[in-house]
Amino acid sequence: MKIAIGSDERTHLTDKVIEELKARGHQVLAFGSLLENESEVDWPLSCSKAALAVANNKADEGIVFCWTGTGASIAANKVSGIRAALCHDAETAKGARIWNHANVLVLSLRATTEAVAKEILDAWFATPYSDDEWNLEQIERIKQLEKTVIKQKQNVSVS
Image 1 (tube, rainbow, N blue to C red):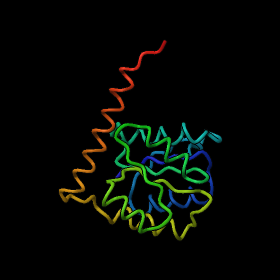
Image 2: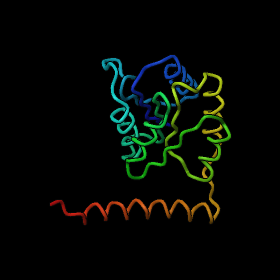
Image 3: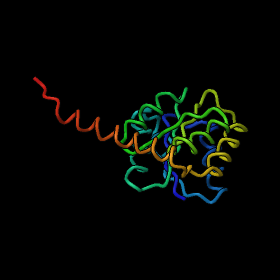
């Protein structure tokens, strides 16, 4: 699986997550400060670029980081088709996959330990999207909401 990964900072945690992804046989597509020739890149840019790679089918899924994870979540979720979930533990990651069909994992650089990150990755990759009727209906509602927002933006005239 190809995983887009973006962060505004390269840290011990980002390096360990990349190492873990590669050990699991995933291909990593890096953005932001995770690129060799880049220094620090702001979170809206690095996280949205990773999310765009997922939305444009250049990557199967994504993982993005920022200090709290909140900004990374906001930036990634601005991309149509992305369902980014900030996960602080394995149970949240499992729920994000089942109920929200999350396709981008968000981790806090401040609050996520290496051990917890591994537990989150275990849950993330082991948990398939739910295919029950109720959950599929909720995902369809999210897709319709995205379409509604796009139409609203197109109908707004600027004076």
